[in-house]
Image (spheres, helix red, strand yellow):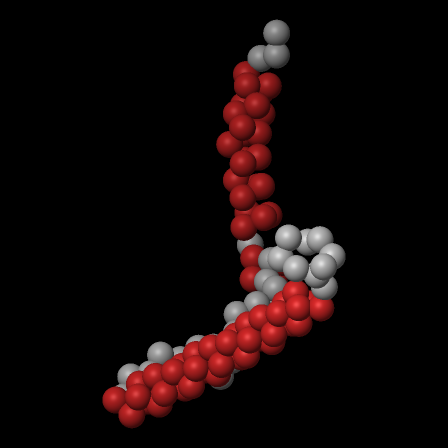
Length: 99
């Protein structure tokens, strides 16, 4: 068969191969796998208000936004309803037959 030298070589390969792979892929990870500008900068991120005035201002802003979106939705629904009524009144009766 192979002998003692072959067994020593195989043992060395079994031990050193995983260590070499881990060393090769494990070093310099920041430069290899870094995505530039992946994390937002502090001025771009959301900031949780901590002071009472900041919390009140944020609640006012959210309330104003919610009311604005509600007014837009109600206006769009009213316009849609008006269009449906105009389209419904222009042709025949309710049964779909011409009068």
